[in-house]
Length: 232
Image (cartoon, rainbow, N blue to C red; front, side, top):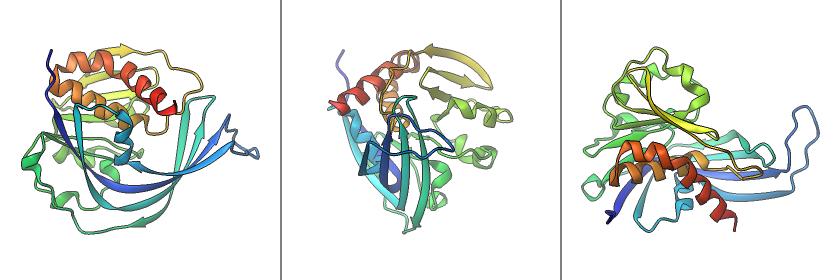
C-alpha cells in the first residue's frame, strides 16, 4: 500500500524540560538521579517518531519550563511545571496542513483565537474536568487522553472518538461506549518520556492513511518501537 505523506501541524507550548532519570523513584525517600538532561518537550516530542512519511510543522503558544522525573523501572514519569511565558497566537497556515493537533488543550492560553479549517485532534495533560472544553471537543475528529483519566468523560456523551491509552493498551470510546480496544504488553525498563505525544502522532498517521481500527490495533506496538529506537 502506498502511504500518503501526512502533513501534521502541532500547536502547543514550547516546553523546556529538565529530565531527571532514576532507576527507581521512591516517594518519601532521598532519590539520586543516574542522569540529568535538558531537552525540548511537548510538541517537539513528536520528532521521536522518525517517520519520513510524516511532515511536522510547529506552532508555539508560549513557553514553559518543566522538571520531569523519569522512573525507568516502573516506566512512568511525573512533571512539575515551574515557569510560564505567554505570547501572541501564532499564524497557522492550515491551507498547507492535512491535520492540526493541539497539544495539551488544558495548558493553552490562546485557543479561542484560532481559526481552524482542517481536521483537528487534541490531548490533555492535567486532571481537570473535560466538560469545560465540550464546545471544541465536538469539533474534533479525534480526542486523546490517558486511560487513567477515563472518569473525566463520565458526563460527556460525544460521537467524536475518544482514544484512551496507557502502557497496557488503548481503547476507543464513542458515545460513552468502548467500541474497540487493544491490549499491549509494556516493555520493562523503558524510558517513556514523551510516549503520549509519540502515540498521538503515530495514531494520527495510521488513521489518516488506513482506518481507526488499524490505528487502535497497531499504535501501541509502534510507539514502543519508536521509544526503543530513540534509546539506541
